[in-house]
Amino acid sequence: MDNVVIRGRRGILHFIRFPTSEMGNFLALAKSKGMANLVTTVCATGGGAFKFEDNFKK
Image (cartoon, rainbow, N blue to C red; front, side, top):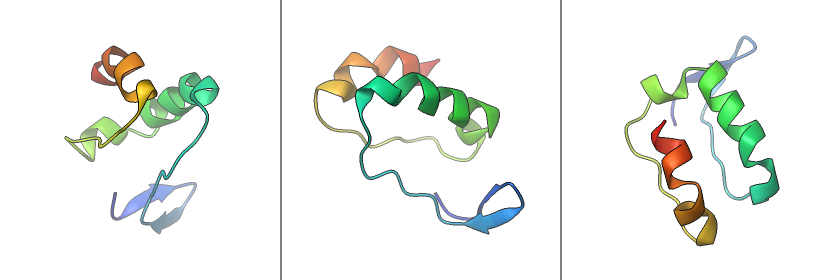
């Protein structure tokens, strides 16, 4: 995601991998930063992509 501002800093945001146990924290961060307004596509692979698909859609 290009041109993202978090805490006054602007840059490119990359999520390479993180434990699925932290998915709740990630979704809370994404929601609080309005990331759904920045992108329309999330690329994900693995079992977590299927397991959390409905959470991402919300």
